[in-house]
Every structure is written in C-alpha cells, then in structure tokens.
Image (cartoon, rainbow, N blue to C red; front, side, top):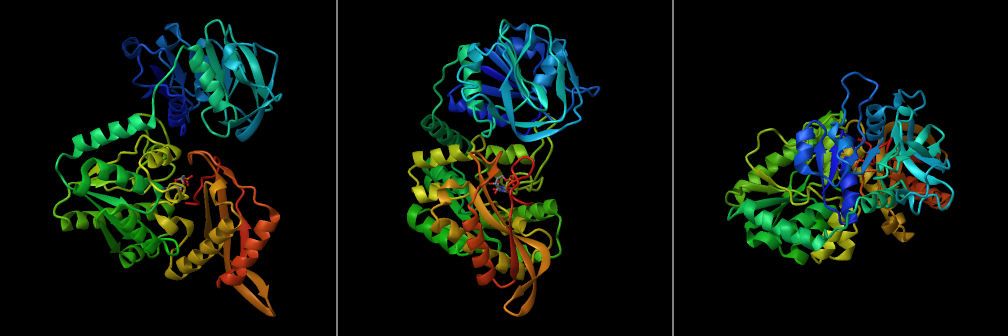
Length: 514
Ligand code: XMP
C-alpha cells in the first residue's frame, strides 16, 4: 500500500486519483493521524506528503512523523510536503516574496536527471508545471541535489536518489502539470508497485455497498439531469430496482428547455419512476434579496432538502436520499476531517445540507472524479450524448447571476446561455470543452444600437478545459468565434448590450463565478 499524508491541500485527492489511474491502491490519512505507531502498523511501501495551506515558517505548523523518513521507503514531498521534508531533514524554507500561482516552466539544472524518477522528463527541454505556493525552499537538506528550477522556485525538483527521497515545489497531481502523471508513475514504479484497480470492480463493490446500506428500505434520488445524479440513479436502480424513486426539482433556475429534456429523457430512456416537482416559486421567493454567494448556496441546499423530505413521505416513507456527490464536492466544501483545508464553496449537495435531516444519505460516487463517473456511466451503458454532457451545478443559474436574482435577470441569462451553447455546438466545439456557460453581471453599461442609447447588462462568457474540475484553463476560442457569438447575443437577447470573455484559470479563479 501507498500512504498519502494529507496536509490539507485542495488537491490532495488528485494524488489518489492519479495513482488509481495507474491502478495502484493507496489511502489518504490526515497528518495528525499518521504517528510513528500508525506508520509501523500501516507499513507503507512508499509515502507521499501532500501540499497544504500552512507555512512551515510559522510556529506550530504541521510536520510529518519522523518515522516517515526512517522507514527506509521512498518518500515524495509535494509543495508543502517538499517544505516539510526540507525543514525536517536539515534544509531551510523561507516565506516567499514572489508568490507563484498557475503555469510555470521548470528547466533542468544538470543534477541526477538519469535517476529512474525522471525517466521521460525534460524530453522537450523544459517541463510545464502548475504551481501554487508562497513559501519556497532556500537551502537543500543534506544528501539532496537540485534537478530542476523555475524562475520563482530555484528548487522546483529536488532528489536524494540514494534514499529515494524526492521533493517537488509544483503539483504533479494536477492535470495541468503536463508530465505530472508520469512523475508519479515513475515514483510508484521505483517503489515497486503494480496494480489491478478497475471500474468494473468499482461497480460491483458499489452495488454491494448500496444493498448493504439500504436493505429493503425506499430511496429517493435527487435528479438534476447532470451526469452525476443520472449515473448515481442508474447504479442505485441496478442495485435495488423499484425501491428507488427519482425526484427532479425544478428550481426555476434551470437552463432553457432543461426541465422538459430531463424528464422526457429519464422517463423514456431509463424507465425509472420520476416525480417532477415544480418549485420555482418556493426557491425564487426564498432567494429574494439574497446576494451573498454562500447564503445563496445554503438557502438553496436547505430548500432542496425540504422538497426531498416532502417527497420521501409521498412515496410511502423513503428513509434514504441518494445524491451524485463527487470527490471534488466533498473536498471543496467540507473542511477535511481533522485537516486544515479551507472551505472554498458550500456545494449544495454537501455543505448546504442542514445539520439535522430525516433522510440518511446514499452517495455511491463520493470517491470518484467526474471523468471516472463518466467511465462508470459507460460501464453502465448510458448513452454517450448523456455521459458527455457538460456539468451543471446544483444551485443552477443562481450562482451565474452574481448579486440579486430576479426572474427578469434569469430570463435574460437563460437566453444568452442558449445562444452561446448553440454557437458552441454549431462550431463542433462542445466535446472539446469541459464546461461552457454564460454569466449575467449585475452591472449595466451604456451602448448604442441603431440611433438609440442603450443601458443594459453585461454578459460574461466562460468556457474551460479540465479533466476533473479541480484545475481548469480557459478555452482558446478564435477571435472570429468570440466576435460572432457576442454579436448574436447582443442582437438576439434583449437586456444585454456588452459581452466579455473570462480568461481566468483555476486556480486562482474557480470555474463558476460564485
Ligand atoms: P468551481 O466553481 O468550484 O466548480 O470551480 C467546479 C465544478 O463543480 C461544479 N459545481 C457544483 N456542482 N453542486 C454541484 O453539483 C454545486 O453546488 C456546485 N458548485 C460548483 C461546477 O459547475 C464545476 O463543474
């Protein structure tokens, strides 16, 4: 087994995910739990120290148990994990003056590049990596040498090949580090791993666990029409058949045509009992005057539960609520159990849940990432056009309408979004993009149309590429596409007279605006 010691990075789960892709079994445990006794018991074949939000230069900041370095097994430190290694093994770390976020390039420095850890790296001269750090290493621990450097991280890649200790400043686990998976694979190879984890095995195991958890009770499943809840519903249906009823809650904040599409598709294709709950008034009245993003998410999360509880009764006493909660939802909304991770957003299907709820949760996808859910969907035989749909957030258009939400604004946003997606489909770009949507800004600007003055809203367009939603880059549309789309939106949508394109990556941005 491989042990991942978690220092609370937002992307620790991705390390596990990359290893899973290489079919390697691993477990993540928070640093406080990983004591010398724990290590002796766990007997890892290799250890990875994750990144984290703390600074090793601060008193009381997290450290690794000494046993990590005394077990004679390969150790890889990532970001904060690198700094912990250097600090504990006799090097030095300083608070950086130049913070470095996003893309960076690491050049080879002539060190032990021939070590098995670096096979296949630097083949094009330099490595494109994803950085997210403030502090940096300023003196190496004895035994280490530098293998690669970036402009703001002179010790971007360091190694002590004799002890098989490796430490990097960037995040090899994120997709945007081009050869990150390769680096992790090299590490597990040299630690002697080979694996047999598969999606088919996951399906079997998930079905077994659902049956065990649910017994003969009834389950309702919140269906949003997105990939996650659909895959969850089909998986659960496979496990417990007609003990399952799906509930589609129309919040009044769905995209154009979505409600009809989802209901038809689901009833016709899957033949699973479905309740279509039209609750637009309930949601929009509760959101009246609410402008704070977290307040919006919490309000919506609570109402969802009220609606689910109502329908749990109406189907004859369901005891369970099933949701398509994914790993990123869990990690980005709840502070890690015992760990120092920071809450970025309360995702409606996790952080927005009230503390006391009559329904117990069934979340069979809780350990998966989006693309793994898609793979599971294919494994379950879902149609490709459904499996390939862009994600849509539970809180819907509410979080794409910064500031106050009104019916008028939602109607404008819905139209702009439909034109934008139509453009993307027409240009054959839908499948190249992870997610694309329009945002209606709470700002009005002056324009001129015909001979008249206009004073209308600004629409921002967002389109990103991503593999798992944890990191993302903006999609490089051509200027022609952007120009044509802006013209169409302004011509076809009353209430918008200016269009902008969002070119922020994640991090430092997030995909949604709220
Ligand atoms: P962010 O904005 O955090 O989004 O970069 C990452 C991915 O998650 C989706 N998202 C949500 N999905 N409930 C969901 O089911 C939510 O509350 C929620 N908030 C964001 C977002 O659309 C993107 O795909």
